[in-house]
Image 1 (cartoon, helix red, strand yellow):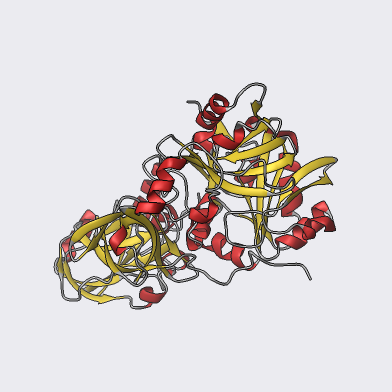
Image 2 (cartoon, each protein chain N blue to C red; image 1 turned 30 degrees about the vertical axis):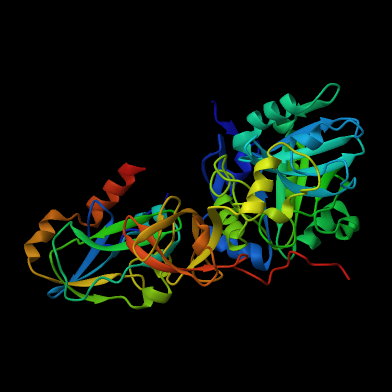
Length: 130
Length: 365
């Protein structure tokens, strides 16, 4: 399987990505994750303002195959949800790093990126799962 | 039991199929996108490898007909060339399998059964037949391919000749192609105009490739098939139909011939007269959330039933499902909650089929 991994993003073992701009992290699912989940049919809008901790529950997602959890790559406060997903959750399949982003987190501790993988490490990690 | 493998496996892998275990077989679940395959079937034509289903052949003098008592289908009064849907019941009216009977000749029938029940069905029917009736399980010799969708008629005419367009709904014929004669029936499990094609195992690959060479034809897997059948409210064995349910509870009275005798009839007669405690219903979620097998159905916080199947319907853009509920609430329009492991969501009981306008009853002009 060819896995698309975006340079400049951070990654978790649970296949979330985070792209940091200033004090905000935009968060989504990786190409590997969307491929494994199959057609995405629903993304639960997280409560705006909710506090989340790194690697803990952020929100829920459903695909034709299963319901699963999305975990926060970084601690902070949920600042935005991608409203386009309410009517077009398939954007997570078709454009997982761009239009299919899921949420934005106002991050509380930038040093937590040390617990995440960079693109090179994640590419090797995902390839090892095949 | 050893996993059985479809002879079309290499064809599926060449089309990037995800293969997975299903009813003792390794079968294609999808070829990339379950939703796209479901949508393509409703607007064009898809082919499905359904080789896992079983084919049992019974021969018996119709004047004797122990087969008549063995299953619910009126085998000796149905016409040669017709198909009928029905059930194999236990003594208490519980559903051992649902099946389609093809009357091949005055004294010969083909019974198409579910993969998971093939061996038990064979043994049960054998046990119920009286000598000199015979039953033969030819499942391993047959490849079954379903050709389904509004454009399926063009594809089938191109392969089997114009004669296929004369078949009416639930009629079959024998047609010459790929160098021999094969059964083609105007049946299916998608709710669209469609055909089911039975060929010898050795011809399977040729037929599959021939079908794919036709315009607008794409392969579809069992994932899409599950969506398509649920959009029509068709039950599936092991989900809506089990030995703990009867055809009356499942609301399938119209497929029964209560004028004839068959094993399990007493319970059904009683249920028709006295009513049932639970009923099979269809329901539509208010949202895109998907109900799944064994989720609880609640009304005012109290469990009143359970989900037997659920999918996301790409044609209604919401979750749909089927399940059993207390008969007293089995009324279209009733609001229910579906309790999932990730929170509950609201749904409404609706009459099936969920999709009312499909190509299934298409007639050639």
